[in-house]
Length: 223
Image (cartoon, rainbow, N blue to C red; front, side):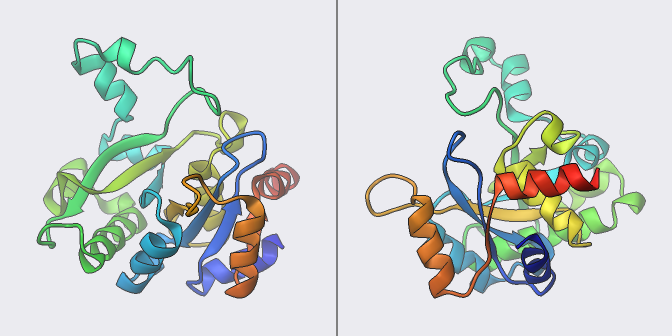
């Protein structure tokens, strides 16, 4: 199933990733950022419905100088330490959220065309990051914006096993620019879709669906 998902990503198709029944218990639609189109964004907001985010590797975030939001808040808000206390977080110990951005080549940044353009520009920047400087990122993007950046944890699954790490690792293993664009699949019940609901969606739309356990097993076998 991993090999099929990798081939789908290479061809620009979405894949579905269910993290784990003992974690969030959620399924995300995942697309390699370099292949995101306005049609993909539209599909994500209509058939996913959660928060559309774009991932980057931690080494790239460091080169650009992008912080984790919880670090930014804890350092700059008077209630920052209390606000970022995650002792009551039931599925993890930390968040991977960084800042939000728009490409400077967008208008409001929120329509499908604008968001796709921002994602494509992020992928282009990451794909050429060896030649880029932090000031180049500021030249291309403005903040705040409408694309939420997520920073994959160093070492991938040694320290965290969330959708940020699962999707970024999978896209990287497909030989693509290591940035994924993801969205949670929500149900009309008011909750996230169950695995069975997302499996039915995958079957009806001829999409690969894989689990976090499968990806982590593959990672363990190859690392």
